[in-house]
Length: 387
Image (tube, rainbow, N blue to C red):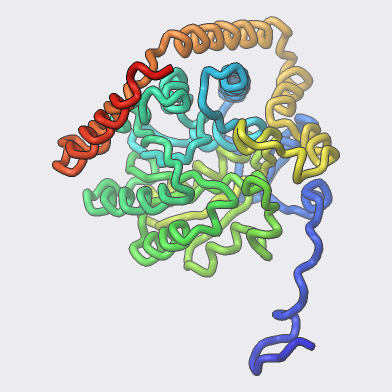
C-alpha cells in the first residue's frame, strides 16, 4: 500500500505507464511545421521561411550530400577502417536547417553526431573520419570554422557553450539581432537528463547568456526511449529555468531554419537563451556498435521513413517547382565523388602513434604528462619482438 505525503497530489505516486510506441506518440505531437511530409508548404502564425526556392534547393543538396557522407563513413567502419561511427540518418533536416540559420560570427558547440552542422560550417568531412579512425582528436581548428571539436562526454558542451556565450556578452558582441554574435549548443534527448545540461540552463538563464540550446530529440537515448527521460515535452522544461522553449518538426528543414533563425536573433539582440526541441527520429543505430533491433519496433522505423526529411523536400521541388531529374542526378554524382575522396583519404591516413596523444592535451605539456608519456613508451617497448 502506497503512502501519501501531505501537500502532494496522489497522482505524483501513480505508476509510470507502459512505454508508448514513438509512432503512436507522434500522432499527438504539436510542433512548428512549414513543409508537410507530403512536400506541401503550410503557414504558421509565428514563424515563416523567408528565403527563396533556390535556398530550398541548396538545403536539399546539403542534406543529400551529408547523408552520402554518413553512408560512406558507416561502410568504412563496417570494413574495419573506422573504430566507430555515430550516424545522423534521419536528422539531416534538424542539422542543416539550424546550421544554415547561423551567421559567420556565431559559435557552434557540437556533440559527436553533428556532421551536417560541420558540413555547413566548412569542416572537411575527412577530418571527421580522422577522429573516428583514431588518427587524431579532431584535426580542425575551431577558430577557422566557428565549430568546436566534437564532445564525447554527454552534455558537457552545453556548459562550454554557455561559458563562451557569457564571454560574447562581456565582449559587447551582443545587441544586434543580425550582426551580433550568439552561440548554439547541440545535444540529444538523452543528454537532457545530465546534470551538466541543467546546470547550463541555470547559468544561461541567470546571466541572460546569448545561447541557443538545440536539442535533437530523436526519441532514443541509445536504448532508452524518451518516456524514460521525461514526463513532459522537453521544450517545456525551459519555462522552469525562465526562458522560452519551442518544439519544431525536426524533419522539416524549412521550419527548423525559421525557428532557429528567430532564436539566434533573440540571443544576438540580448534577449537571452532559447530552448529548441527538434522532434525527429534516429533512423539508424546510436553508433555502429549498437543494434537498435534489440529494443525498438520495426514498425516505428517504417512509420518514420514516411516522414523522411530529404524526400519531403524532393516532393516539393518536383511537384511545386517542376525541378527536373537532372538536378537530382547531378547531386547524386557529386555525392559519389565526395564518397570516393573520403574513402581514398581515409585509407591513406597513417596509423596513429599512440605516444603522440600525450602532446595534444595541452598547448605545453605538463611535467606529469611528460612522465606518463615516458612510462607508456617504456611499456609499449616491452612488447617489441613478440608476435
